[in-house]
Length: 477
Ligand SMILES: [Zn+2]
Ligand SMILES: [Zn+2]
Image (cartoon, rainbow, N blue to C red; front, top):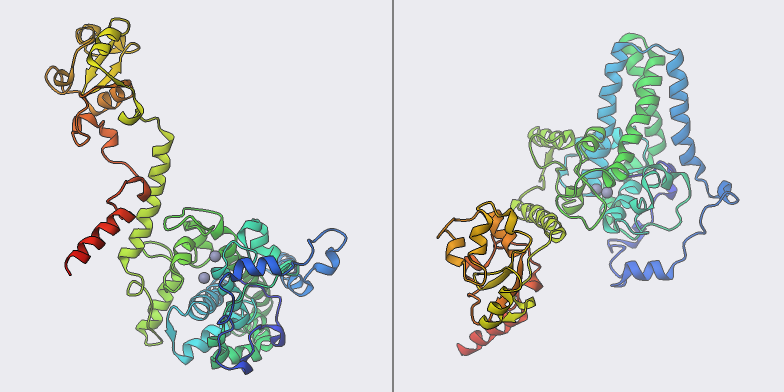
């Protein structure tokens, strides 16, 4: 989701507030993505020989030193239970600064927050050391807009570790795609946080967690190592998992065009940001998990803030009707069913089979066991001995029409038997093929099937249907 690389407020923005209210992406070409990828050159690939010049040393420092200091510190400082409880609590508080604040409030505007709530989220977010709100949101908006392309700063197609950490350790090969943050440039809390970012990081990241443990139960060192440094490492990797794990592990119940996925494990490690397939479909929704039993403490927090009068205008099903959410789910279910359907062998269609006259049918029945059922001629040679009712019942019908006997006259065959029979089709009797709407001619496995709209023939949303209705429309005048 973010980088901690740009802690300096002076280098964290690409939009210029002096340009006024004009969104930065107002006048971009219609083919912006392909145009930019074609006409701007990326920096050369990182190799062993240029590595030292391409490393982002500031990010690398903040991503490598805290885990080292935390691990060494933990060997020398005993973890007290009070400090443990405080560290976990502070992990959630600073993590929510990112998930409920940076992400859902500022990057996506999925709800409105009162000024006190905004200051609290901005301050807690700073304690997560992931860059200022404005810088973070700018990158995240580009991530949503250019997902899985080279204009996405943490493009998941570049691999799990690149999207988790790698993109921060080396200088980006390209600038992230354009994304407007003019709304944030005007926000007083965002501006305030941007201005005092460094001081806020020191206070919220390290001083406050130590002071609370020191004044509370006399454990300043423990507060620093566990609630400060190691808590920060956990918050970092929790957030980073949204860019790596959430684009790698799980299901795609709403859309499989891009990499975002839904998974409970990701939700647990990211304070509820694990329903990422849904989130990329409905980024303005204040929820990540839409079912009550799914783990999304960020959603619960926003909801609680709204109950306390600190948040309002929570965007959810009013903007994205449940009907549209379910439509997305159904599309993916049909797609999976279609895949299953395509993996199976299906009987030949009447259009693909030779049309055989009655005389020819009689003649050929003398050479091989052919039986007529529902207008189709079937070759049952490799089935005679396996027929559950006995071979004699099949032999009796060679060269004859067994439709009535098959459909209940002698035995009302099962769906499976009918499906199997259809696989044995070798021809269509001339003049004997019943109308396609006759259930007996269609095996049960084919009465309901997944078809693409252009396979349904005219009359279903095709241009023919359109012109017909247009003619009808014109006739009325
Ligand atoms: Zn994503
Ligand atoms: Zn997002």
